Length: 277
Length: 284
Image 1 (cartoon, rainbow over the protein chains, first blue to last red):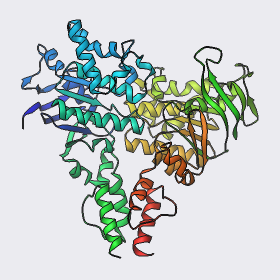
Image 2 (cartoon, one colour):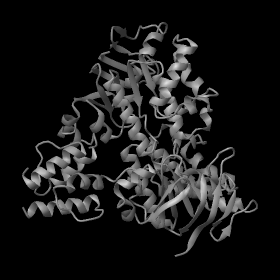
Image 3 (spheres, rainbow over the protein chains, first blue to last red):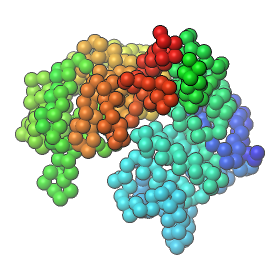
């Protein structure tokens, strides 16, 4: 697999802080994977994103994006390859209409107008928001706003999209729509997705989960390996998955296999036990 | 303090061409000392409803009774201070309202505003900072040096410091990590056990199932259901029309009942669900 981001021995300490926010962290992120970075408030998730996007400068260590180690001179090139969707959609709008808003990033890049119109239309089509292009962004629902924010990012044709808690303010329907859309785009557009979250259910669509604690990676594995940690997840500020909690309450009197079962697997298992009665 | 809505309608821009109904003939009693959850889709009118409880909004028609006070369209904006002391409101992302140079001053602001002495307010700040799970060393810090989760706790401490009888929470845990969320929810449940009335707006149906005594469902400005969580989550009309999502346990029970299992009423918490499954598998 081809690496798209390679982080080596990264350290960062906030001014006047006693302990490092990122502590000797190394991580490779591969092209076209969906990586979830999870951990409690203050674990270093957001700091790591800021370092990757060059918003803050590491105390030591290196970050390479698409094969190029980032430094002061090429940070803008690296940034063009990365789009970020933030938590609060209301804080990201600048345009008076949806299409103006999506065009904003392209105007910054100095794209000619005719080309821009095509790019904006295409991006809105990808997120299924074309019919809203003349609307005021503020009149949209939370989920629609995040879809517009994603279109704004897509229009600039990044290779990597970072979602920084971008569904935490949405209601359950809005969240589902946005996550499914992102997965679809990842496949179609050959994108790499990095999602920062502390909602364990938001990680279900990802291929790999990294657990951060005190600025260090404490676990790195496939979702089922991470979910298998069960109650241990609460040590990192995360919630134990529902099926794992239910299994704990059942174990004393119901015979269940060892290890983690997804909700669907647990259901099948219980059906089997029921039919053998 | 019991809170009663009697035929409350609230129209935004009532006289203008863009008039829209925020609330449509809502009658509801929020019982004294209970934990009441208000649920409904984004834009359904939940926030409009609770903003009537401390008269941030007034009914266009109908009345709201808060204890012995009556609020109607004619109520003057003067003399609302005592009501606002009784009804504390924690808005979404309350940390955006922090502004003082130290945490202590921020928490003291409410009590002083409501007439407490400097010493009383200080004492209150010391008590409240611990109540929200931070130690006293935080009092001398700048609120802006704290993490998001800590800022949230300080903002909540600021509302609690005025010792309101009724506490209104508008998605108070959005953006907190799950462990922090549970701590904050447990704290609100504890406040209720000490006699406070709690009103919680939430999208999280597991919080409704785990913490609420009573739940009101709002849709398009109308109250469409009100009752015990267990009954509401078993109301087929609501579920059939997608007006409500289920807590995880009820959702799981529903799937289980496709084969073999059967539930006379869907269990709404993990403990209830576990008990039911064990009974059905072991007959005990």
